[in-house]
Image 1 (cartoon, each protein chain N blue to C red):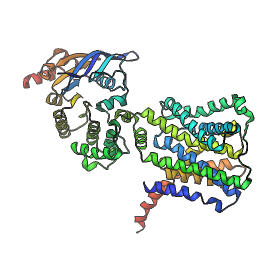
Image 2 (cartoon, rainbow over the protein chains, first blue to last red; image 1 turned 180 degrees about the horizontal axis):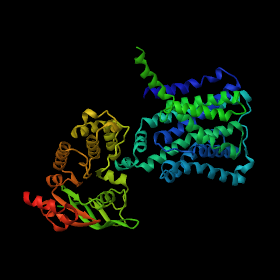
Image 3 (cartoon, each protein chain N blue to C red; image 1 turned 30 degrees about the horizontal axis):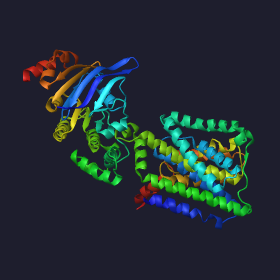
Length: 311
Length: 249
């Protein structure tokens, strides 16, 4: 395992200590941090490794949220509903990927974006199953009290983040990761050396949807109420991309750090500039990307490059 | 001699343009076939049809007794059909070693990344790139990248190897070096089809020449006979070349 992957896993383990340091606010923020981490790390599989700029994150987040939500409503336990959301998302993404990933570049981006709209409309119209635009109430999973509940969902989301990080590390060191790097660099040549590019891309798309779907499921159980405009919010697609760009495209550690930095910025800006918060956040992101186009991870090599000059 | 590859009245159209018209051709095991013809004659299209990049519009392609007309590119690569590109196609960020390792890894079943890298070293040494094995492919010179293409193709353990203008853009010393490599490959028993504009190389290496013009085969035979064929002189070589070759040969 490379050093940066080791740091990645150590960072994830470190987050588990968070509940010791704060109250419900820290728990809420921690849960969202883990969720953002899952979205960003998952996006990195198809966007960073394979080089396909996917905007489908929100589609699978919403799909997972509704899958788990409907199942929970029918009395299926949480321990089954959340894995089911992950597995269904994986299968659905593999199938859709085989068709969508024939498109490249901007065309793929637009097609993946349209998935959100398609899923949202389907959920809106399947009123009997999903409650349509009225939203879906999800029964409480426990009656242990607010704090216990918050702690429980934090660790659930944290566990998913751990799973995502493990998946990413395993993929990066595997034949799959090697193949995806080939596809990113030159898909024609990848085909020519005997690589089944359609299969590899589909599996990558499936893996990038799997944990996102499960995270959607946990989110649904956590907030007890979901509606289409909430879980199929395009921001769930855009944010992971911004996080990956802030951290450094392709590097899992960078992407996870990017997710936390983004959340930090979001919180600080939200508190201090409540009326113009999205504007300020936008400016900050543009500035960051202008001066650090290769993300925070490039700072390390830059600092190393500076050192000899001072000597 | 049994044919390793057989094309049966193969045509390929690109919306109105007939790039290949009714081409029938058999290639014997162990042959070194020169495929020549003017620009736009359909030479690269022929390679693309055989390797499944642009499947034939009509006709059949048989490789080692198996119909591969509709076989996908990655499958034909695993069957032992390998090619180099006219415009080199490296994995630019990868080291030379990983470029070759990728070819070994994905074309051979049961290969691991570690064993693929080991094999790659041998192939890099064969084409004389061992000193550059850790260098990113993007930083290599054109001549080196052409040899890298060759090493990649070899890592796939090809039974039939298409060389699409491996000598284009090289200086004479580099051409000589590449020619020596091709000779060695032929000696190792690999069937080779080379697309080439340098007649010196074609005559030096090939055991047989076929000529494409406007998507049709206009000549097929021993090198000495083909270059004297009036249709070939008219379409491709030109009168001056024929006179010079006549004076020398």
